[in-house]
Image (cartoon, rainbow, N blue to C red):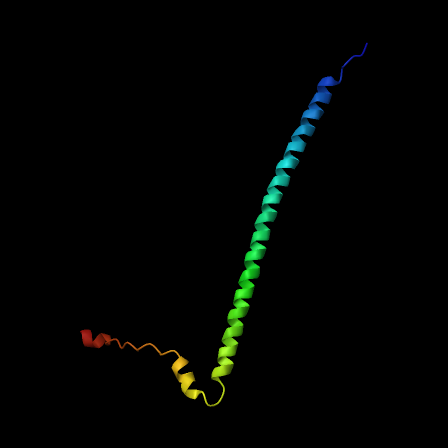
Length: 95
């Protein structure tokens, strides 16, 4: 005949182990979600880098074309126009 004097303690250990197992499974899912998020961010930043590099390359090519001699008239037409200057009246004229 067997005495199960330690069965309640064993059950307690098994129950605690099951809690640890569930916690580990939840943590795994959370980390998988975080990994997917980071992969998406990585792809987004890779696209952003490509787009910015292309814009820089286009801007450098445009500036090198405009700095060539014989195209000074084109350079003037490409140059942005300055905003008009607004002159405010002095305080003395309000008195």
